[in-house]
Image (cartoon, rainbow, N blue to C red; front, side):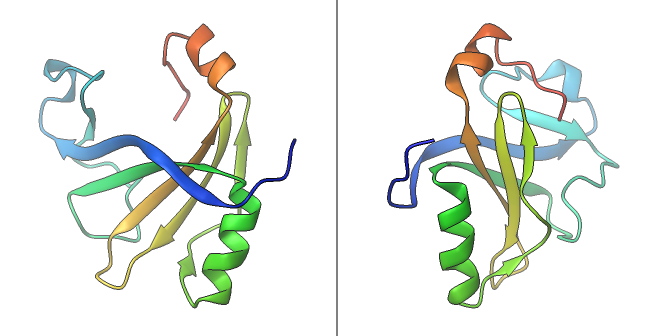
Length: 111
């Protein structure tokens, strides 16, 4: 991996809880089951996913600035993920994608 300056490169998705997630178009939105615990520890009804580069460097800078990192970086074949909390209690997902794999799977993931 080429080391680059850590930065946000775009929005990867906006996630929210829904009573009927199968009825909502996943390509525009990513609805989760209403009772999902994926947003925990946040009690909010939504979560934003930002695409980033150099996720390890990003996490280091965030920690240096007192940002709460919820867990360790998780690695999947389609990219790396980590979750942080903002001061308002919103969980934010950071994603360093492997675009070639994500495209091959048609945007499907195991998350």
